[in-house]
Image 1 (tube, rainbow, N blue to C red):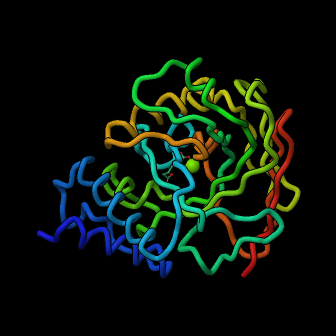
Image 2 (image 1 turned 90 degrees about the vertical axis):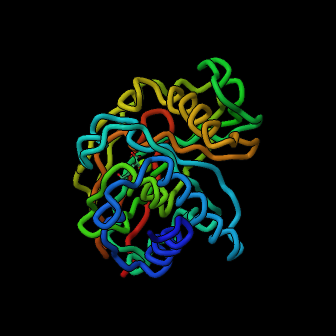
Length: 256
Ligand code: OOG
Ligand code: MG
Protein backbone atom coordinates (compact mmCIF):
# COMPACT_ATOMS: atom_id res chain seq x y z
CA UNK A 1 0.00 0.00 0.00
CA UNK A 2 1.15 3.54 -0.72
CA UNK A 3 2.38 5.17 2.49
CA UNK A 4 0.47 8.04 4.10
CA UNK A 5 3.33 10.37 3.20
CA UNK A 6 3.18 9.15 -0.41
CA UNK A 7 -0.53 9.99 -0.46
CA UNK A 8 0.21 13.39 1.13
CA UNK A 9 2.63 14.08 -1.70
CA UNK A 10 -0.05 13.18 -4.27
CA UNK A 11 -2.68 15.57 -2.84
CA UNK A 12 -0.12 18.31 -2.18
CA UNK A 13 1.27 18.17 -5.73
CA UNK A 14 -2.25 18.15 -7.15
CA UNK A 15 -3.00 21.34 -5.22
CA UNK A 16 0.35 22.97 -6.00
CA UNK A 17 0.06 22.34 -9.74
CA UNK A 18 -3.77 22.57 -10.05
CA UNK A 19 -3.91 19.07 -11.53
CA UNK A 20 -7.00 16.91 -10.98
CA UNK A 21 -6.46 13.45 -9.47
CA UNK A 22 -8.51 10.29 -8.89
CA UNK A 23 -10.14 9.83 -5.49
CA UNK A 24 -7.75 8.06 -3.13
CA UNK A 25 -10.58 5.71 -2.13
CA UNK A 26 -10.85 4.48 -5.75
CA UNK A 27 -7.71 2.43 -5.17
CA UNK A 28 -7.81 2.40 -1.34
CA UNK A 29 -11.45 1.81 -0.39
CA UNK A 30 -10.51 1.13 3.24
CA UNK A 31 -8.92 4.54 3.79
CA UNK A 32 -10.26 5.78 7.15
CA UNK A 33 -11.12 9.24 8.41
CA UNK A 34 -8.05 9.04 10.69
CA UNK A 35 -5.91 8.21 7.62
CA UNK A 36 -7.47 11.23 5.90
CA UNK A 37 -6.46 13.56 8.75
CA UNK A 38 -2.96 12.03 8.89
CA UNK A 39 -2.54 12.64 5.13
CA UNK A 40 -3.86 16.19 5.56
CA UNK A 41 -1.35 16.93 8.34
CA UNK A 42 1.52 15.53 6.25
CA UNK A 43 0.49 17.46 3.15
CA UNK A 44 0.22 20.75 5.07
CA UNK A 45 3.64 20.00 6.60
CA UNK A 46 4.97 19.96 3.01
CA UNK A 47 3.51 23.45 2.52
CA UNK A 48 5.20 24.61 5.72
CA UNK A 49 8.42 23.16 4.33
CA UNK A 50 7.98 25.54 1.39
CA UNK A 51 7.72 28.48 3.80
CA UNK A 52 3.96 28.77 4.29
CA UNK A 53 2.84 29.73 7.80
CA UNK A 54 -0.14 28.68 9.88
CA UNK A 55 -3.08 31.08 9.50
CA UNK A 56 -5.79 29.08 11.27
CA UNK A 57 -8.36 26.47 10.35
CA UNK A 58 -11.48 26.09 8.22
CA UNK A 59 -14.56 24.19 9.21
CA UNK A 60 -16.49 22.39 6.50
CA UNK A 61 -19.94 20.91 5.96
CA UNK A 62 -21.43 22.86 8.86
CA UNK A 63 -24.62 23.64 6.92
CA UNK A 64 -27.22 21.37 5.32
CA UNK A 65 -26.82 23.15 1.97
CA UNK A 66 -23.13 22.24 1.89
CA UNK A 67 -23.67 18.66 3.04
CA UNK A 68 -26.29 18.14 0.34
CA UNK A 69 -24.12 19.67 -2.38
CA UNK A 70 -21.23 17.26 -1.87
CA UNK A 71 -23.12 14.24 -0.49
CA UNK A 72 -21.12 14.04 2.75
CA UNK A 73 -22.83 14.66 6.10
CA UNK A 74 -20.03 15.05 8.64
CA UNK A 75 -18.50 18.22 9.98
CA UNK A 76 -14.86 18.30 8.82
CA UNK A 77 -11.92 20.67 9.18
CA UNK A 78 -8.82 21.72 7.31
CA UNK A 79 -5.76 23.89 7.80
CA UNK A 80 -5.28 27.43 6.49
CA UNK A 81 -1.91 28.93 5.64
CA UNK A 82 -0.92 32.54 5.00
CA UNK A 83 -0.42 31.71 1.30
CA UNK A 84 -4.15 30.90 1.01
CA UNK A 85 -5.21 34.34 2.18
CA UNK A 86 -6.37 36.49 -0.72
CA UNK A 87 -6.37 40.27 -0.75
CA UNK A 88 -9.58 42.00 -1.72
CA UNK A 89 -9.02 43.90 -4.93
CA UNK A 90 -6.13 41.63 -5.93
CA UNK A 91 -8.38 39.35 -7.94
CA UNK A 92 -8.49 35.58 -8.06
CA UNK A 93 -6.18 33.91 -10.55
CA UNK A 94 -8.39 31.20 -12.10
CA UNK A 95 -5.36 29.38 -13.52
CA UNK A 96 -4.16 28.45 -10.02
CA UNK A 97 -7.17 26.19 -9.40
CA UNK A 98 -8.71 23.02 -10.83
CA UNK A 99 -12.42 23.93 -10.58
CA UNK A 100 -12.81 26.62 -7.93
CA UNK A 101 -16.06 27.46 -6.16
CA UNK A 102 -16.88 30.30 -3.79
CA UNK A 103 -19.01 30.19 -0.64
CA UNK A 104 -20.02 32.82 1.93
CA UNK A 105 -18.63 32.24 5.42
CA UNK A 106 -18.07 33.95 8.77
CA UNK A 107 -14.49 34.34 10.06
CA UNK A 108 -13.42 34.55 13.67
CA UNK A 109 -9.98 35.62 14.86
CA UNK A 110 -8.91 34.45 18.30
CA UNK A 111 -7.22 36.38 21.08
CA UNK A 112 -6.79 33.31 23.29
CA UNK A 113 -6.21 29.58 22.67
CA UNK A 114 -9.18 27.22 22.68
CA UNK A 115 -8.89 23.52 23.28
CA UNK A 116 -11.20 20.55 23.62
CA UNK A 117 -14.72 20.72 25.03
CA UNK A 118 -15.75 24.35 25.43
CA UNK A 119 -19.12 26.06 25.77
CA UNK A 120 -20.38 28.65 23.29
CA UNK A 121 -19.74 31.33 25.94
CA UNK A 122 -16.15 30.14 26.42
CA UNK A 123 -15.62 30.09 22.66
CA UNK A 124 -16.97 33.62 22.32
CA UNK A 125 -14.74 34.83 25.16
CA UNK A 126 -11.70 33.70 23.13
CA UNK A 127 -12.78 35.69 20.04
CA UNK A 128 -10.96 38.91 19.22
CA UNK A 129 -13.15 39.90 16.26
CA UNK A 130 -15.53 38.57 13.63
CA UNK A 131 -15.71 39.30 9.90
CA UNK A 132 -17.57 38.45 6.71
CA UNK A 133 -15.58 36.04 4.55
CA UNK A 134 -15.63 34.11 1.33
CA UNK A 135 -13.87 30.80 0.97
CA UNK A 136 -12.50 29.54 -2.34
CA UNK A 137 -12.76 25.78 -2.29
CA UNK A 138 -11.16 23.62 -4.94
CA UNK A 139 -11.35 19.87 -4.65
CA UNK A 140 -8.37 18.31 -6.33
CA UNK A 141 -10.52 15.27 -7.18
CA UNK A 142 -11.99 14.97 -10.66
CA UNK A 143 -15.54 16.30 -11.01
CA UNK A 144 -15.44 17.61 -7.39
CA UNK A 145 -16.46 14.08 -6.26
CA UNK A 146 -15.11 12.46 -3.11
CA UNK A 147 -15.79 10.28 -0.08
CA UNK A 148 -15.34 11.60 3.48
CA UNK A 149 -11.75 10.37 3.90
CA UNK A 150 -10.79 11.70 0.43
CA UNK A 151 -11.94 15.26 1.13
CA UNK A 152 -10.27 15.30 4.56
CA UNK A 153 -6.98 14.12 3.01
CA UNK A 154 -7.32 16.94 0.45
CA UNK A 155 -7.31 19.52 3.30
CA UNK A 156 -11.11 19.71 3.12
CA UNK A 157 -10.88 21.37 -0.32
CA UNK A 158 -9.39 24.54 1.16
CA UNK A 159 -7.52 26.68 -1.29
CA UNK A 160 -8.13 30.35 -0.57
CA UNK A 161 -10.08 32.83 1.51
CA UNK A 162 -11.05 36.49 1.54
CA UNK A 163 -11.77 38.21 4.87
CA UNK A 164 -13.64 41.52 5.05
CA UNK A 165 -13.46 44.21 7.74
CA UNK A 166 -13.27 42.97 11.33
CA UNK A 167 -16.17 43.79 13.67
CA UNK A 168 -16.10 43.59 17.50
CA UNK A 169 -16.45 40.08 18.95
CA UNK A 170 -19.72 41.17 20.61
CA UNK A 171 -21.41 41.65 17.21
CA UNK A 172 -24.41 39.32 17.02
CA UNK A 173 -23.78 37.11 13.97
CA UNK A 174 -26.28 34.35 14.84
CA UNK A 175 -28.78 35.16 12.09
CA UNK A 176 -27.57 37.64 9.49
CA UNK A 177 -28.85 37.76 5.93
CA UNK A 178 -26.37 36.92 3.16
CA UNK A 179 -26.63 37.78 -0.53
CA UNK A 180 -24.00 36.46 -2.95
CA UNK A 181 -24.05 38.00 -6.44
CA UNK A 182 -22.12 37.17 -9.59
CA UNK A 183 -22.05 39.89 -12.24
CA UNK A 184 -24.90 41.64 -10.44
CA UNK A 185 -27.14 38.57 -10.41
CA UNK A 186 -28.08 36.91 -7.09
CA UNK A 187 -26.69 33.35 -7.01
CA UNK A 188 -27.13 32.47 -3.32
CA UNK A 189 -29.33 33.96 -0.63
CA UNK A 190 -29.10 32.69 2.93
CA UNK A 191 -28.38 33.36 6.56
CA UNK A 192 -25.50 32.79 8.93
CA UNK A 193 -28.00 30.76 10.98
CA UNK A 194 -27.55 27.98 8.40
CA UNK A 195 -24.12 27.38 9.98
CA UNK A 196 -25.05 24.92 12.75
CA UNK A 197 -27.87 27.24 13.87
CA UNK A 198 -25.27 29.86 14.93
CA UNK A 199 -21.68 30.14 13.63
CA UNK A 200 -20.31 30.18 17.20
CA UNK A 201 -21.22 26.47 17.33
CA UNK A 202 -18.75 25.94 14.51
CA UNK A 203 -16.01 27.46 16.68
CA UNK A 204 -17.05 25.14 19.53
CA UNK A 205 -16.83 22.17 17.12
CA UNK A 206 -13.46 23.41 15.83
CA UNK A 207 -11.96 23.37 19.34
CA UNK A 208 -13.23 19.82 19.86
CA UNK A 209 -12.16 18.40 16.48
CA UNK A 210 -8.72 20.00 16.52
CA UNK A 211 -8.15 18.58 20.04
CA UNK A 212 -8.86 15.11 18.66
CA UNK A 213 -5.79 15.60 16.47
CA UNK A 214 -3.78 16.54 19.60
CA UNK A 215 -3.72 20.23 18.67
CA UNK A 216 -5.42 23.40 19.82
CA UNK A 217 -6.63 26.66 18.34
CA UNK A 218 -4.08 29.38 19.01
CA UNK A 219 -4.31 33.12 19.64
CA UNK A 220 -4.12 34.80 16.23
CA UNK A 221 -5.77 31.88 14.44
CA UNK A 222 -8.50 32.65 11.91
CA UNK A 223 -11.36 30.15 12.02
CA UNK A 224 -13.68 29.97 9.01
CA UNK A 225 -17.04 28.70 10.25
CA UNK A 226 -18.09 26.93 7.02
CA UNK A 227 -20.23 27.82 4.02
CA UNK A 228 -23.69 29.17 4.84
CA UNK A 229 -25.02 28.28 1.37
CA UNK A 230 -24.06 25.90 -1.40
CA UNK A 231 -20.86 26.92 -3.20
CA UNK A 232 -20.95 28.61 -6.63
CA UNK A 233 -18.59 27.65 -9.51
CA UNK A 234 -16.14 30.31 -10.67
CA UNK A 235 -14.92 31.18 -14.14
CA UNK A 236 -12.66 33.89 -15.53
CA UNK A 237 -14.29 37.27 -16.03
CA UNK A 238 -16.80 37.05 -13.18
CA UNK A 239 -17.26 39.73 -10.55
CA UNK A 240 -18.31 38.19 -7.22
CA UNK A 241 -19.81 40.26 -4.42
CA UNK A 242 -21.27 39.11 -1.12
CA UNK A 243 -23.25 41.33 1.22
CA UNK A 244 -23.63 40.35 4.87
CA UNK A 245 -26.27 42.10 6.94
CA UNK A 246 -24.50 44.27 9.60
CA UNK A 247 -21.01 43.00 8.67
CA UNK A 248 -20.68 44.61 5.27
CA UNK A 249 -19.69 43.57 1.80
CA UNK A 250 -16.69 42.01 0.10
CA UNK A 251 -15.93 41.32 -3.53
CA UNK A 252 -13.34 40.12 -6.02
CA UNK A 253 -12.79 39.65 -9.74
CA UNK A 254 -11.92 36.30 -11.28
CA UNK A 255 -8.96 36.73 -13.61
CA UNK A 256 -7.93 34.36 -16.39
C1 OOG B 1 -15.68 20.41 1.23
C2 OOG B 1 -15.33 21.61 2.05
C3 OOG B 1 -16.55 22.18 2.72
C4 OOG B 1 -17.59 24.23 3.78
O1 OOG B 1 -17.52 25.41 4.06
O2 OOG B 1 -18.59 23.56 4.01
C5 OOG B 1 -16.41 23.59 3.13
C6 OOG B 1 -16.22 20.80 -0.13
O3 OOG B 1 -17.35 21.28 -0.23
O4 OOG B 1 -15.49 20.60 -1.12
O5 OOG B 1 -15.44 24.28 2.94
MG1 MG C 1 -15.91 26.41 3.27
